[in-house]
Image 1: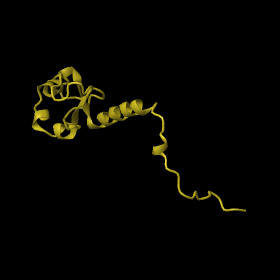
Image 2: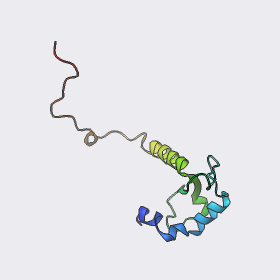
Image 3: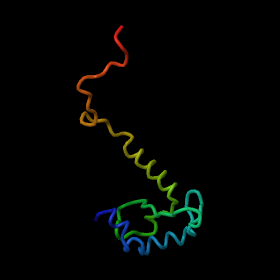
Image 4: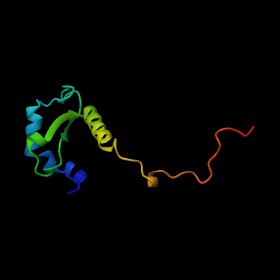
Length: 102
């Protein structure tokens, strides 16, 4: 399943688990408590195990700012112990000296 297509679909917008989570959160961010009237709310997947058939406990209501922060933190944790591979670093063909020769 293509995640971006799914998140943009009516199936996601009308997903019973998504609507249940929004209702149970009182249409407020679970992190900062901002309301839907004051910020754009998004429903974050806590797990992708049931993508397309989510359960309410798979989801968490967050404002867009908190969603960005949570996603960044989770990505940082995921990749924190990933070693840099040689293919990730390509040195310049001829390194330019930082200082002029004396």
